[in-house]
Length: 421
Image (cartoon, rainbow, N blue to C red):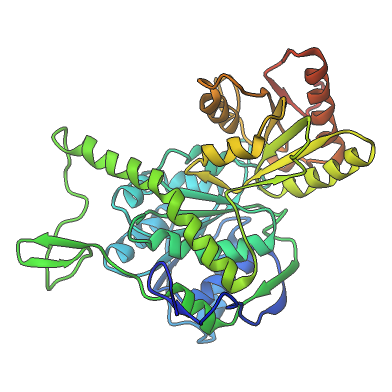
């Protein structure tokens, strides 16, 4: 028998793949269905486009008696995460979902959830932040929360959304991680588009998820679980001034750094159960690539299509999909990039007043002390839901080809698809 990372036990040998069922689900429905199978104790819900379908569909599961979840219809996104914090602190499995302005309204509570080391799972249907009001996709919302201490997973399609919405629980609740997780899916592009999704039986998901475990602490009434319990009173989130605050932040630093090892364990276990193997960084035709784009989310399918088209024309293009943004898997990125001479960083976010977009700045920082590194150029695309078409992707590769030929990056950041650019 093989012991799971958090206590789930599977069958003998390596062949443990479960029988699966093909379903037609959009990204929001994939989140809702996966969450139904997990059967969390509490779901705190507030509607916001393009996330609303998630909690709307889940409320139907509750009404139909398909889950035992306590469904709490709160008055705001701030309340949704606050409710999740209280529930999780008391020992419950807690889930919520939001987007854009809703995530911004949660800002205060994001930091509280992560600093209290609460294993909450939250789906983000990525949407542009106002103003002006825009309900369509870019990554400005979750990118703004990149330093809030949450793990962030970005999905390319509805299948990845379903899978991540299950494995996220094992990651968040892992005894060596104990950190909340965001599962990010592009608004409308994924949230409202139906795709084929292979789903596992409820009982297999329950076996994979197992029971939530708790860290053990020593209180004034003896040893007990780290959760709010009237039988063993303790305080969570008290005043923490200059005498200990810094040390507690370092605990989070170490947890995020160490989580790279343990997230990999969970993904490998999921692969044996589902047959779907995920990596933090997924290279495509990089072995002999002379130029490549790296990015996240639904546009990576378009980029893969363009790589195939360019290859058919004799252009040695490659692509790297980044699935895990927090913690940033620096060594895995460098391994995937290899010795490609020119790397384009393509992103649906702006860091206002900064030299480049968030991912670009982090990659440049990661390579700063390396003697051997690619020339890098930044391409910002798709803000406010503007289509990231094959033509736009081709423009990026044409730009990279020019950089390779001249040996010079004349423009660090380029905004593709903008009128007048």
